[in-house]
Structures are given as structure tokens and as C-alpha cells.
Amino acid sequence: MRPKIYVKEFYFEILPKEIKEEYYPYDNIFSDMDLIDIYINGKKLIEYVYEYEKEYIFKDIELDDETPYDRFSPIPLNKCLLDNCNNERFKRVLGILMCSCQTFDCWDLDFRIFFGDKYIIWFDFTNFHRKEEYKNFPIYIFPKEIYKEGIKNLECLIKKDET
Image (cartoon, rainbow, N blue to C red; front, side, top):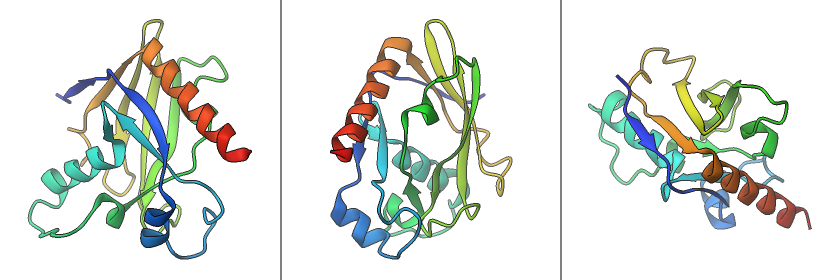
């Protein structure tokens, strides 16, 4: 059974320019866009994924001096990617994280969202290259108010960046 993480804190931060330039220096479709880290309970989603991969997928490989940004890349986000803008109950989110090479379909992390009356749930994390390997990745359970506050934080980041 997948572990459950009950979310008490949910927010977003723009990836600092120096990290973006160090880890993703090449020109691509994201060059002129801000990459956004997702924080759940004070920890980046990219770190949850990296730790999971180290424990379950790369357990026999030495990953000394490596950071999550060596393997994965955050993406530019918008409100409708994570919110229920169309009043849906379920939503499939494609590519919430991608490979550090930033090539589509190289390594993309997808998941589903359930929009309940009291809770928003992120579940069924998958990567089409590793279908069974995310079966123990956690389910994230957000109280609706905390989720809405996080989405407002994302909207503010995006608006501030546009000005």
C-alpha cells in the first residue's frame, strides 16, 4: 500500500536564476520561462522524487555529490495545470517534473488529481518508462483550504513575474 502524506504546507518558489543557469544552461523551450519548484510540507517535490528514486530505483548505484537537479527539472507552471479550472473531479497532470535534459518524453513524471469536497489528493504517480516502479510513491492529501492557498501563491508568483 502506498504511504500517505498529509499536507500541512503547500507553496511554490521560482527556481533561482543561478541554479537554472548551472543545471540547465542550454537553450530550449524553457529558456525564457521561470521554472517553479513545488513545496509540500516544506520539502520540494523534486526532492521527494529524487529520494524515492535513490531508495527504490537506483539503490545499487553510487550517486555521490549529485543533487535532484542533476536528474530532474521543474517546469513552468500555471494555475490551470494544478487547479480544477473546468470543475472536474479527476485530472491527469502530464510532466510535472521532467528529465534534466528538458527533452519531452525522455523522463516525465505524471500523476492524477482528485478534487473532493474537503480534500484534494495527488496520486497514481507514473513514468511511462517505469510503469511499475512508482507503485510505492506516496499519495499526497491536501485539505482544500491549504491547497487553495498554495494555488493563490502560484498565481501571485506568476503575476509578479509578468510585471
